[in-house]
Length: 387
Image 1 (cartoon, rainbow, N blue to C red):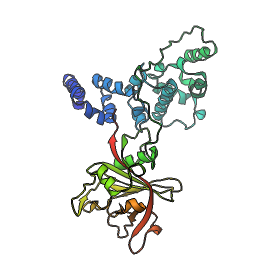
Image 2 (image 1 turned 90 degrees about the horizontal axis):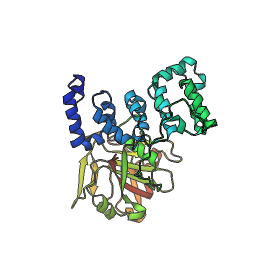
Image 3 (image 1 turned 60 degrees about the horizontal axis):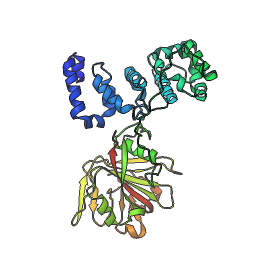
Image 4 (image 1 turned 90 degrees about the vertical axis):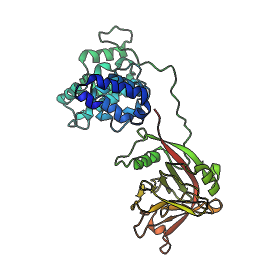
């Protein structure tokens, strides 16, 4: 489609565009961020741009809070800011527009108090297509003073005078064009529950784990995390037995296990994309190069530790009916897990499979194992968020 646009095959590009929207909307949603960016590289793809914007105006933070927001094409930002149905407070739209504009001018001093007239003029030129679309007369006086006033030089003199006049004398007629306020959807968007999704980890932890799954160098923020966690098992709710583990987690894939260690601030865990399969007898051992184990930053634990599989030929996922979740030489839930809630970690002294995720002083030199009791543990299945 993009190639068709590049070579001016507009009719072909429009055909592919409509075909994707009508028959492959699910695929477009799965790759939404990339599709959104690419669609605005060409002015030909109007239908795809509208399809994307119809989603973004309802869920604006998917774009505005993404790490790639400042890389957004100008025409994409203009098309969003110009929408009457953009579901965001006007002052927040203003702050995001300023953030984007500053990012396009990397030579600007960090503190706007140090800016010269030329600096403000550069920002004004960058934002010339966005500034007329802000609904200044629907921003509170406090927000005007705190967030708009520092950048008054990028506004036209007449507009800034009218903004101030409206605050002083609301009923006085003005010469500036007053845009209507943003419309609020009649159908309320789902309200996010305030109940914690986990007894062990928080949203920051979840975003960090998601970053590891996607092998990103930069961590996801809590807002840009593209995944959600579905709770499969909670020890304090469902029990700490191996039978419970197999009843609720057998053959499930994309699994995250998190464990709160009793008596410390430690949170240990692991990610298993292929899952465990309960064997009729013996054990099932499988290779999985994408699984990993970890320790999370928490309380007195100052840094998270990520330990990936070093040798893809090693069978690191063990399924054994007498145990719960088992990451081979990473950590294992013992067969008497329900009685004493005890697990153990292996310290990979020979550097074969994993690096240790606990302080090595906690491991037995002879057995290479480190035992601990569990306060709580949870098993989640991770999914891409639906738009």
